Image (cartoon, rainbow, N blue to C red; front, side, top):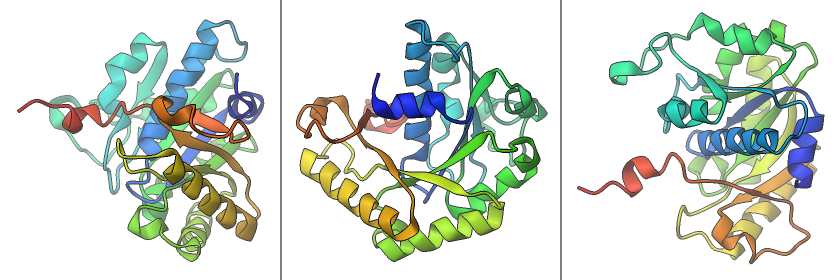
Length: 239
């Protein structure tokens, strides 16, 4: 088990994933859910109940609910709108059942929010249930226009905190060029995230990358292998 996953498991059970729209929040959220499910299957305690809540009602690029079947086959409950996206619905409403995993002290739950402070605003209706049992992570992708300078990232972190009344806990480095990403791109993105972290006093918890380039990175880099679960919907589609 990596230090990053140990950190996640030993920390607060409610994980809020925020960031600029298109930063890779959903890919990270889904990858983290599958990673926790794999550890549960290996017998790691504290992971018997897992859930992912798709709260991305504003600025959606990808929707984690699109993988509901795959995640639930892995023992991960998925919550979204009342109709679970059937018939391609994009209703800006949530299933009240989302409160179940949020209020369940035995459930480790990931809340995948929408982009920037507007998308994160949805957390306000759940904030009273978080108490001190949450961590809010910001996914940094310097290749997105709203993340291409440290000041832009700092401004967005501040706006999310002010909008939600919640404190950011850490940064996730996820700078990439999809399948054209190199080890150098990952390291450059990590250096950028660390620069941001120093300026706002937040730790960089990991650098995300695909498994095929993980071995090219120095052993000193805390890596979280990220899938391309959401990308298959259009990158791999045959027309």
